[in-house]
Length: 115
Image 1 (cartoon, rainbow, N blue to C red):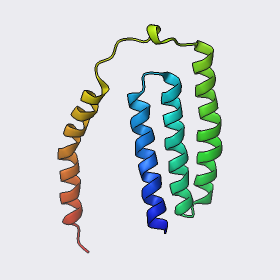
Image 2 (cartoon, one colour):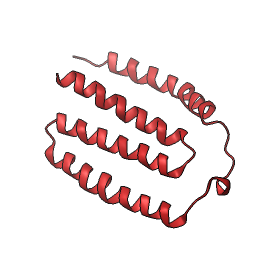
Image 3 (cartoon, rainbow, N blue to C red):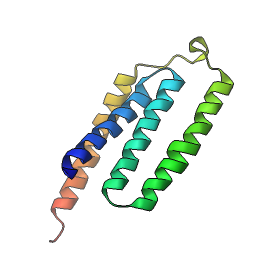
């Protein structure tokens, strides 16, 4: 049961992080960040790390997100005021391609560790 819950929380964390990068609206990006923070808090709860779970909820998902949302609302950023950006999907793809050698190096290093 814990494995299924972990997979669901990991899926929500990754989906929230991707949503934070893809959405053009700063408010939707902030909500994607909030979903990611709450999912990470759930993972801390699965690890029985109560202090980290509460800090993640109170400090990050509560105070920091309230500050970010307050600043975004205070600035009143409109769509036409945002700079033109290249396609995010191309940037995400390039980043994934650049991470492949690092992932292969880490997997090779982990497989060579003595048991």
